[in-house]
Length: 49
Image 1 (cartoon, rainbow, N blue to C red):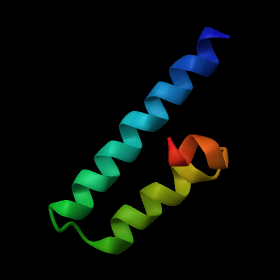
Image 2: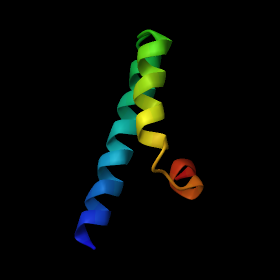
Image 3: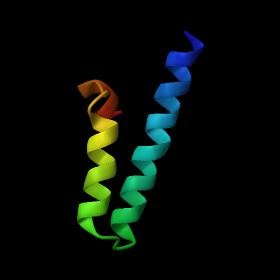
């Protein structure tokens, strides 16, 4: 169970980093590739949170 919580927190951290990267003007292709890797395991509610 703690592994699930840790994974959830890790995904939140990565999503925040992705948003920051976009704001900093990093190339969309690189950011999108990272986003796609995180989102494939994400529940819709988790993304909105």
